[in-house]
Length: 192
Image (tube, rainbow, N blue to C red; front, side):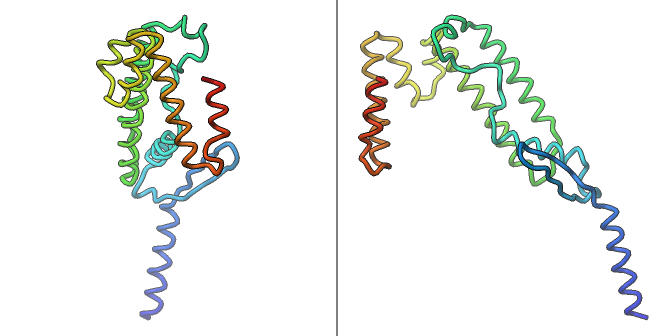
């Protein structure tokens, strides 16, 4: 009798567990995937939001500004770009902060918010660096000031800082390559 009761109890637990399991399906560029979750613990929306948070940690989340890559793009840069960036930043950050995620994903959600803050600060300083270097200098962390200060001086200061930067990059390559950075030096000095 005891064995039958245990078997019946285990069977009912298995049926209950199966009834509580739901499947979440997602797809990336290469694969279709799926996973089961306990619908008594989590909602499908929490699972979807958690997946969005984890996926967002691997990419840029602010898409309204990209640094100018040529003189024409530089000529078109304006404070409107900063306004557009700020508007996007507020919207994206608020959307992420409102997401209800599973408890294990809350730390990742906080990291994503920090990442978005960092993207915004970097893009904001980039815009200011082109349009208002003295303001960019005031708002920059100390490590960035070494690159901004020459812009406020003269062309020679910019060239000297650029040359110093190139030499630092060459030294880094020399430390990690078998040829002592000779190949990278030839490439870098041609560009300089």
